[in-house]
Image 1 (cartoon, rainbow, N blue to C red):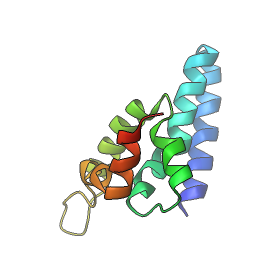
Image 2 (cartoon, rainbow, N blue to C red; image 1 turned 180 degrees about the vertical axis):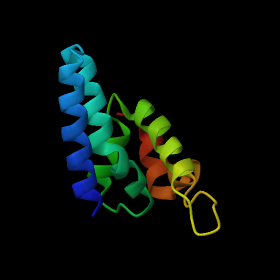
Image 3 (tube, rainbow, N blue to C red; image 1 turned 120 degrees about the vertical axis):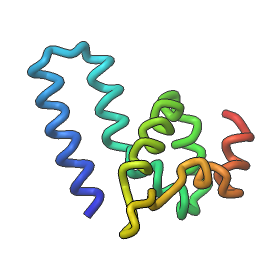
Image 4 (cartoon, helix red, strand yellow; image 1 turned 30 degrees about the vertical axis):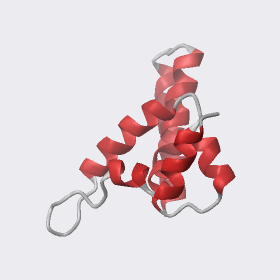
Length: 103
């Protein structure tokens, strides 16, 4: 279950970032990226315009897109090819339209 993956990943990262004494703002940024990294990939099927708008216009979305692209390169199909192309996900009509709308 991907939701469980995000929860555990965030918990592990939070403990590590705290132990390493990272500044609160950096810690919160990293934890937001971890919490939302699979949500970015859900843009390929997401239907709620409000939810898409909230995600793509979040101040950290630029960083999230870089993380999502890396995730795509690391998530392979049975032939060893990336399962998704995040650039294609961003070109999905509803997503592209909302991105272009701006705030």
